[in-house]
Amino acid sequence: MNNNFSKLKDLVMSLESDFEKFYDKNNAAAGTRVRKGMQDLKNMAQDIRKEVQDAKNSSTEKKATK
Image 1: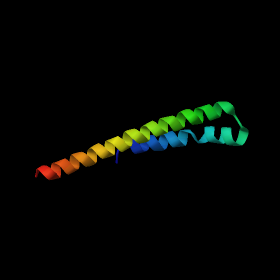
Image 2: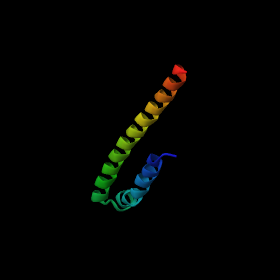
Image 3: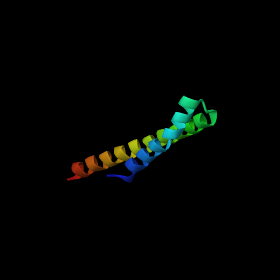
Image 4: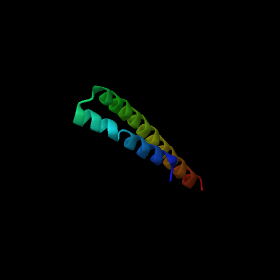
């Protein structure tokens, strides 16, 4: 399994306390951290999508050349 999945899980888990602080305690600074974390998550997801697509295309090309 790729290390990206572990990074993704770690990022989500690291945001848990900020989510609680923002939604339960109305902490505005925590909301800023949540927004930043969600942007990081979006970027990481896009990178993983590209990596998967590239691997899939590479695999398909190898089969086509045989």
